[in-house]
Length: 293
Image (cartoon, rainbow, N blue to C red; front, side, top):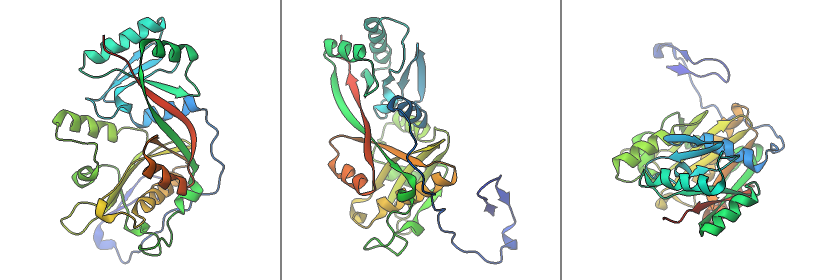
């Protein structure tokens, strides 16, 4: 039996010493203002929380590849000086991704990216796909979902289980992993990378896949939420909110006070959920697709 205190190393005890036990409620996040972090720095934090399987510097830029698993892990984070004139730097980006059989995406932040980079991408005819970065204080998020209709008084939070690794059940619900072994291997590496990663699961019936999952990675003041998935037949029962509330409580225990997530601009359903949880838009970034040639 392992006892994990709020601070200090885990303590291992023989199970026969256990006399009684009870469910300990999540640690309540203390009310604190949202951390003040510029969009460029928040993007750097996000990059460390979703580290690509392969990374290579180009000056101050970072080339990232992960067998095509998500654009975030297969794009160049173009922050700072690439050490080359922009046309040469973007040509090097295109060649690097072409050598790996991948499209060449450039991460462009608004506000944050230099106007010269945007102008050069426009000149090349790059196509853009916008993503919103949304933030919220953890205090309100960790208390979300209590008393939600259709779930227990705790808002379903008592059903959420946390682990440091994503097991096969968790991965079976995560819709971004396909049947390609190379992509699955890259996905496992990316998902488990980051400073402090937690995976949340709401178990299903015995022998059945989980009802809901989520992922959180914590670094300093910030906690990133992602991979929030609920089985279609288990939706509208507050499980997504419960998963995020438990992950927020865990992040608060590790000292975080702000949460952020990244959502595609056209995902109206997810945006509505996050609106209800108090998230607002910090900034936008785009995946600029470089034309081939």
